[in-house]
Image (cartoon, rainbow, N blue to C red; front, side, top):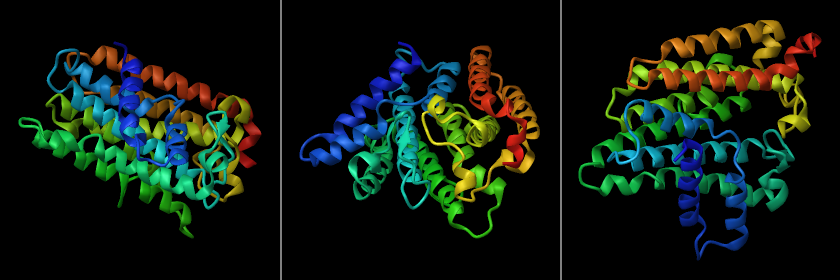
Length: 301
């Protein structure tokens, strides 16, 4: 089964548990809208790709753990998008080309949807903590998910930087974006029984590249093509690497960071395929940033 198909199947199964009766029907519909249809599914893809590069595939006893770790990160990511779009933050009316959750289902429901998805991320791994032979590994994976979700350098802290009067750009991007990419590669490594720490630099560099590309797209991208509003950072006076470095400087940093991410991939049986995947993610990021690259004056917008 292809990785993307495996991700969608796993998410579908986890969502069934979250929205089953007696879940309020309006709430259930809003939860499903937050997760489906999905975007790039980059974070769960990295979990499974790293696990596969280390030998976790069909028939492996820890494949289900890797799948649930992948689902956990995607549920966290979707929760962060729901909260990020709220009127108190970006006040975005559409995401992935569709109305945002608060636009379609109401602000109070959207807050609860984000909360439910965060809890759901942990619920996806908790059953493994009660399975003999998997409990210790599942506990370590839960700790990684917790670090990525909360504070001091998880997505909650990353979102909180947007409420500060003075923003540390490195700490902001590290918490809001890189933490999830680090968690992705570390979860995949853990599921395979590999040392997760050596994979952290790959995730950090990919996260940095992803944020730079997103900042470039926000600065000079096309909203219809991206499926979400642009120039939100300037409108909300948020930190933006492309505004700080200029379009050319940010684009050069993006390319160098992607190259460094490929170099940082540790030796493993499936290294060549994993580097190819990282390169593919890089090409996609460069495509996202391309509209900004074509508008050199955007650096002063």
